Length: 116
Length: 115
Image (cartoon, rainbow over all chains, first blue to last red; front, side, top):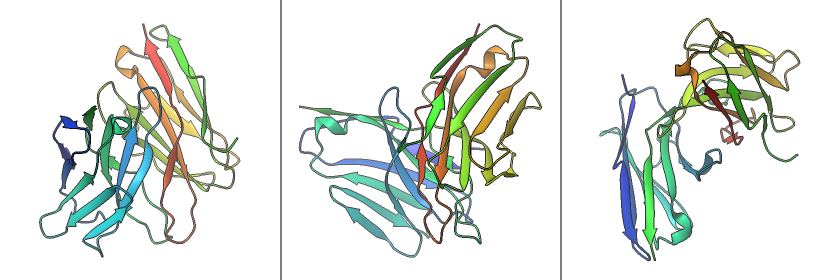
């Protein structure tokens, strides 16, 4: 059972445009939602993360929108640049009683290409 | 080093061979995770340590997979009698277990190819 569904599988955006990637989750126990960026041959790197107590979080050109009732969250990349071309993964996890996160459940990834 | 270090970067094993993959987490990080990433897929959780205690091993696909972190720092993922379906990138991540700090930092992974 796939607990985090990510779409689209691939995305092509013109330089300067807005890239939008969507994720939906099933497990209502999830309370930590990070987005990771992965370049070929590298491990995933955290971009931005959100907790359910807020509906939006912005860091530079990256924004997460979170809809708790719909169990959906999305990543928006404003003013997309060729250097943003990578694979993006949404993930979901549970923050345990000690404040750390349990293992994350990842989406299948979105291959993003920004055309110059 | 400043980041999570994994070795070897690449490993080719003959089917039936045992392999050991090493992870050096960021110094001081209490939590350590192992993930398996198949080609073109997202990472899948294997197991989780808090210091030397293995708190969750629900993602290990079979009893051929074994992980340890005996002194609460370096961890080793061992795969016995490797099969072709074990071919994947094995990622290690560590995180600072303090308050609400939940960011997990990933290493570059070990690409295992079973032939």
